[in-house]
Amino acid sequence: MLTTILNLFGRSPFAPLESHMGKVANCVQMIPELFEALSKKDYDEVERITAKISELEHHADLTKNDIRNHLPKGLFLPIDRSHLLEILAIQDRIADAAEDVAILTTLKPLEMLPIFKNDFHEFLNKNLESFQSAQLIIKEMHDLLESSFGGIEAQKVKSMVDDVAFKEHEADLIQRKLLKNLFKTEDQMSYGSFSLWMRICEELGSISDLSENLANRVRMTLDLK
Image (cartoon, rainbow, N blue to C red; front, side):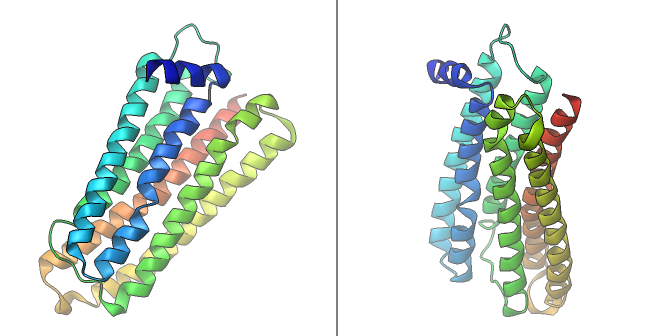
């Protein structure tokens, strides 16, 4: 793994970030499959998918640790070393959030009631859109380097950051509607199930929150250049 990480740094100081983000995406992209199984009450499949997400999160963790441990101290970086590590840390928290969502679905058998099912899937999709937009920003980092963090490319990335912020705002609006409908089910499920759904919504919402944080961190890096 050390050789691989060093080779990535040789290509671009941002290549390891993109590699790690790819592993984070592997975790996040399994969440729709997880809730599809849950909506069918296929609890064995929920357990299987959760185990897979945990395995993928572990791979992302290993990559994060390798990058941290082997970031060459003498390497010239176009951005402050601490900023690069902060971006890495936010990416890592997104993978953690995906795993936390999955684990919550296994704590007890849950039912996705019709009154909030559509809003939940809309909320899920908007969080995924936020993440995917943030991932695209990380993929632009090499082009930013090529343009010396200026010009048309910098303006393009700033526009992409604004797009992530807008998607996160949309996710917040959907979450409010979802929670209102969720509260209407208080007498249709146990307190434990209701509380667990609340926690799932909160943890799922953190994916768009963290995606916005990641985008803003890149924007701050641009502003400091």
